[in-house]
Amino acid sequence: MSNEADRTPPHLTLSRIARDLPPSGIRKFFDIAAQMHDVISLSVGEPDFATPWGVREAAIYSLERGQTTYTSNFGILELRQLISRHLDTLYGVRYRPEEEILVTVGVSEGMDLAMRAILDPGDEVIVPEPCYVSYKPCISLTGGVPVGVRTTMENEFRVTVAQLEAALTPRTRAIVLGYPSNPTGATMPREALREIVDFAVKHGLYLVSDEIYDRLTYDGAHTCVASLPGARERTILLNGFSKAYAMTGWRVGYVCAPPALLNAMYKIHSYTIMCVPTTSQKAAIEALKSGEPAVRDMVGQYNQRRRLIVDGLNNAGLDCHLPSGAFYAFPSIKRTGLTSEEFAERLLFDEHVAVVPGTAFGLGGEGHIRCSYATSLAKIEEALHRITRFVGKVSPNAPAPRRTVETAPTRAQNRPSPVKS
Image (cartoon, rainbow, N blue to C red):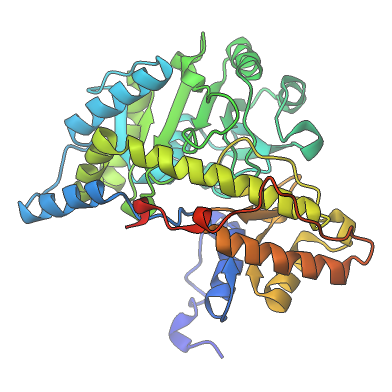
């Protein structure tokens, strides 16, 4: 029975936007799993590695020196200079640290700022789906209208210009691009991105590009959208430190955009956030200075896990394409006859494996589940064993499980990485 203090008095109402905002479909199963024993969680997209020691040490040292005051609302200049150099080195795209880079509380704040800066009520934003759970709510919170475009496994979850054309209206203001993709692991070829940039130029649209998984690209090289001809002047580039550097809890991201656009986001940021915590910014500075070996090591381990989990899901009877980026597999569970919610719930309670139903990620998500492979090889193997057993129970016609030598981990491969120390 709810407490009297928990009720909103009848004469005090909530906003329509707040009432209609759906809860995160990711956290629902994570929270249930947290109350259970012997659960293997493939549900939350968070590295299982600790932040590299050198990064942690730099943060500790900054605290010992009493560096606990506010910084510039833009963020520490040294950090912005390093971000500028980092993007230039990797992708040949240059941003001026003084007026084109803003340090944010993760990419999530950056997405919120971007939508607040470019949208008026009723403006539309095209969002390829399945997509990360916060994209559409960030649009709705501004009074904007998210327009979903369904992508499919048959097309490797890549949006096409023809689909964008079909979704275009006179109210369209922007396109959100999230590649490598959470939840599908899809990436976009450079030429396909060029076509999307040309489409945006033709129709006068912004491109909001979430590239938080850029370093977690396994097949081919990542293309930074802003580096393409005609893209920089209309692109809001979002990135951060959470995934590549195992720094989710530090909450450091950044936005890069032309001066007038960035200044609009800066004004909102300065009133709502002020600045990212100094200690976190000091850690990010060290990550850019010395974190590259740890990034390469972690990406190598993710790549090994990627092949193991995709092979295991296919062998269990769940069709799964090989993701090219991020750390998620997005198998189809359609042959079981269960909905995504039913599959995820029964798998959790029957076999104690937590996954996220594809419906949490919008159009095209039904019939799929998201499995994060940001966990150890041993846990992935046990989870695959339980999933195979579960699929065999709910889908009697599933193929018999088999094992391939190529992806079978050895005892040596199961040793913990020094990055975790």
